[in-house]
Amino acid sequence: MKVYHLATCNTCQRIIKELGLEGKATLQNIKEEKITEAQLDEMYALAGSYEALFSRRAMKYRSMGLNEMQLTEDDYRKYILEEYTFLKRPVIVADNQIFIGNSKKVVESAKAVL
Image (spheres, rainbow, N blue to C red):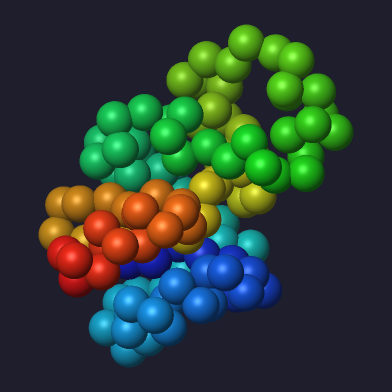
């Protein structure tokens, strides 16, 4: 089991604690240890699209003018690899299942499976 998160994000830390993942999962702080192409492609295979992994809430989304562009799957992939803030967090990969983001529904789904 692997969790891609930000160590400085209170929401990520709360979810990791709530799901009891400390010591059970490999935690990757994406600010310190960049996501590799292979890791992102593995997430893509489970999620079905790079767009599903992309965070439109990132401050840079607007500041870079991306909100005014028609982004393609290749664009989403490129931006996530270039800038860690574009990955919707946390991403939990467990037993060929993926849980993306911090919505209540996603956390409840992860809780049911884990």
